[in-house]
Length: 438
Image 1 (tube, rainbow, N blue to C red):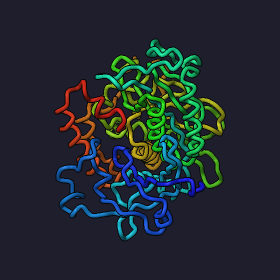
Image 2 (image 1 turned 45 degrees about the vertical axis):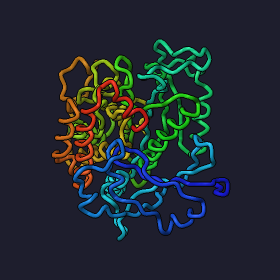
Image 3 (image 1 turned 90 degrees about the horizontal axis):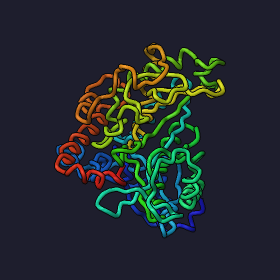
Image 4 (image 1 turned 60 degrees about the horizontal axis):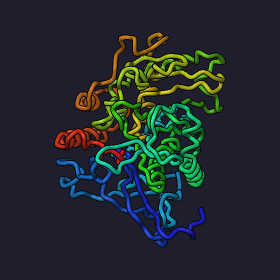
């Protein structure tokens, strides 16, 4: 990047909900970021979805609300094309004064899991599919956006419609230009089943970079939509009678020689692939709070709605929670289809990859893969609601293998406070809470 074109920078880290928390800083201070970082209270990464302190959190008054040190990640700065003034964002993560990672930082949670793969000489490649809605939020309730060509609200299902892609071509062109500027590897775009719903696939790359891509992409899409006089949302279920938003995660594991450990030369994959599948299945119910972190997330899990509701796996079957896509054997991978679109990508990848590694470490065997429609089968499911998901996450031994006690405590306290506060808001106003915060 040529920094002389920028007047200001944003420095930001992801909080537990995936929101950006940080500061606006002048260009003159940029050179200090790499050596000194910038200071910010540790508690800021553990606020609720409204941005309020967590009551009784040990990170707030009990500790004097002490500072940590934000340091730049290895990702490096990116432009912010949705702003009028030339600005750039420096992705950061949080450390203590002694240089140790802050355990409540979700990016560090993913790093801990990836380091366990690294100890085996393995690296993880991942890709994400990002679903979102373009909406009109100018009224008292969400509505479909206006078709930029006709000026009338979008109507009718338009799954894989070239006509709908063409109607929103100006927005999508600007979105791809922004991805290029931010070095987000956007691949194909498709019109999805919902009114004004789209999906952008981001290419495979190192798993940490894939999580960074997803985090930055969400902020960019929301910003670019506003430039086009719309809103964009990753809410899990913006419209009760329409398709929900998910974030599907594809991953494979490479050994020291660059060989895919899931590839046995055929379509079925190696025993290690099946161990990883079993681990992913074992993590489905305990990790529900990660896949569905908000009050409206649970509206997405409706049978027959293209969102998985039962714990199963299959080859080339999109009704299954865990899918093994077909294609060249060297690209054999696992697709985890459960997470909603309103998630924190660092926590999702940590939970998926941590569960898969537990399956490998323990030599878990999965049940037989299903065939046919998963919705027709009686299968073990996710936790059914927000409260039970919180209780399971907080006490489950598999989650304790993946996440530090501090992160589990902080996330549970955050969600417990959000459950209380959301109960005080009429259901018809919940979208105002989540529209652009998730």
